[in-house]
Image (cartoon, rainbow, N blue to C red; front, side):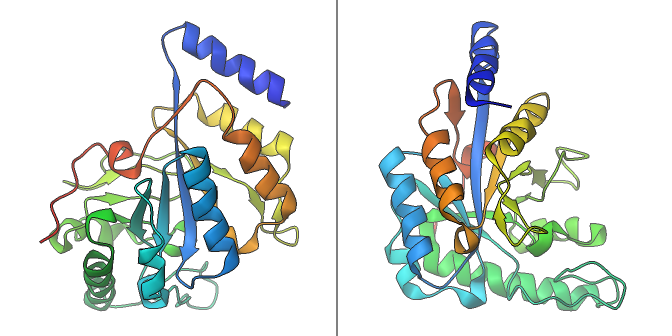
Length: 244
């Protein structure tokens, strides 16, 4: 897949009255390091809204002072600790953990982010490793969460009452290949495939592990015409509650 092919496909969608919407989620925000500053500055320079998935226990106060109007904050677990049992895939929410313990941890992280991020906070949980127990989903609205975001095509737009799911679909990092850029062709092909779905195309980044090629790809992506970039609040189709 080339840029020309990708842009031609976008133009065809535009001409057919079905313009492509996208949203951008960046995971593992917390410590204020140069890559995070670079990502926030890129969003500001290109005027592309970004949803920072922030790990509450890792978040430094300086992070929230860096945010510009195009940055939203969503919840990335609470401590991003892998609690998986032997043989279980990485997760902060293992099957063997009491559901009350998991909910208490999520609620604690929710409170921290709501306090520190204020109006920038969009009450959405992006679970670490994109995995969350199904029995937790119906409990999240009682905490105050209104959305959940994982990876891949969603099974349902509303996996539990009063909870909307909007996923990411294009991960630009090849995790099994020394955490390097997945490659221009592969990333664009993933985007093309997900354009056929009902969700906005979700672009997933991890600022802390980006190599030069990943940054160059994003710079190029954000110059493409015929993509309408939406904020997290718009992607999840509700108005965030006022911060009190």
